Image 1 (cartoon, rainbow, N blue to C red):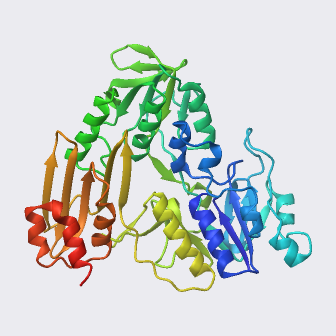
Image 2: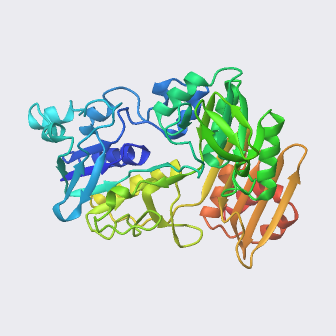
Image 3: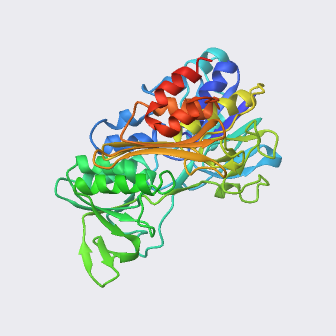
Length: 446
């Protein structure tokens, strides 16, 4: 059996390892579009902050881990997918900064095939040629989206914070006293704030048109608390409406005509799935790739996982894209199990966000906005940056927001994802949300 995985992020690597555990004799090829060892994008801020070196971002440590498992890694971009031919086509022209296509092969294949990997022909063909598969997993992840501000593309000193190469560039410029503008106030931007503050820069955060922070994972109360917390730590706030463009330098061009030279602009205004390579493939897409409960696309031997997969939302029962690493890993294990002969039905991904915004821990789960016909209870301590909101539907906890605490994270997720009946604890929590741990210990033992 020949498995091909497009994408070398957490979903791709976990899927490859799962396939190997389930099938010791199959051929596994992972195609990654960057000339890097597989790494976690969520670890990039820790690299910028100086808390880890580059190897600390790697998904697996040691240079031979994947090779010893007999997993072939090809560093190239996929141009298109041809389901009718069971092949993927690689881009003929490599990026200017990319290393030559590489293949890892030792250990397993040497023992099994007497010295050469059956994928060695693939490495030789890479760059405009094709790779055949019996089953294909698409795990191409997502990429940064850019705000509609002129001058961002191609201007020196303007970077996303998405790749290790971005992180290297940011780290080389963001020195103590540097003037840095961070565009975006969502999840990705907020995890970068802490890293930049640790480099002692003068940081300006550009909020979206709503003027809110993390509006897709927090309500007004929580978002305002995070904003005030960041301001108390010296972060200056501006809104997107006050910025008209970016000039060479870089220079931040304000709507009132002012021009502000800065040292660095980091753009973190959201992400979108990498689905362009599927144009004309016949694979059904919407916001992402549409999958069934077994991670199959509309084409039987093609599966999808991670940021690119639009599958079942646990809370709503609808299809959604949840672009977070824990979901990608869950996707990968289940998809790989089903690709290799299992029949595991996915229960759905829980809308879940855990964020460290400049040292303030926040998290939200499930239907944190509330549901029709539901009830809610909340406790707020503005002065000490503490906020807990619980959302109920009938006898169940269906959503929560938690600011300033870490001790309830597992409890909130467990009650929501386990659909644990609360019984008498529903009214008790309505009166005092802080009793959530007592409720969990009592209800979970029934």
